[in-house]
Image 1: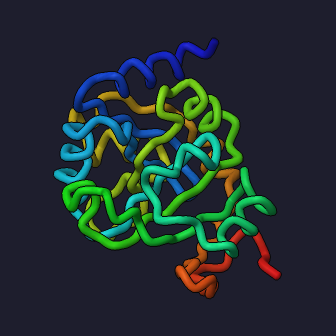
Image 2: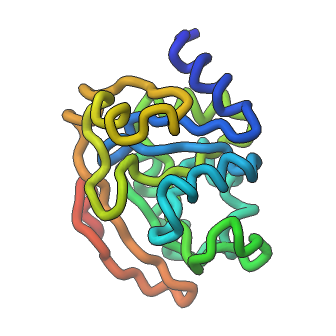
Amino acid sequence: MDLTLLNALSYLEKPDGLIALPGPEGYILAVRPDRPAALERLYRLKGHSEPLLLMGWDLPAFDPFIAPLPTEAERLIRQHWPGPLIILLEKCKQLPEEFSPLCSLKIMQPDNAMLLDLLSLNPTGLLLTLGAARGTDPPAREATAVYNTFGDDVDFVVHGDVEILESVAPTVVWVKPNDEIQLLRSGAIVLD
């Protein structure tokens, strides 16, 4: 087993554990969704201005967090996951306001082997993430930039500069409850 992943998992086990790791568009800050203190810490660093990206090991892991999946979202998931497709959806109405004050949530099953390993080893199979940047800056693309930006505010940084350099921006779509699909950003996947 990869020692780096074990270290990352050990920090995620902490009640307020927050790590940084290579994500689909640069480094991301990540916490476990069942750790309220960690989520509060994430919001303290980043604010509430953007929808959370919930990464999951498999589709059933998302069930407590999203409203019933629109048919078109399920079709896209079956065609393109794991892969570089982020889907914006309505969040589940039962989620408390402090979980996310926004009415939407982004979901993704990444195709990155390291992220999938981390998700598979995590008891929830999920990570809540936001880009590793301050304000409106783009997410850091190098581990040193994460250290320079966040310092001790991040418990552990999983190095993956090469993965980020080789990654292609994911396609982002909004699937509305009525099954209307709106392309928010073109990326690695071309939708039919």
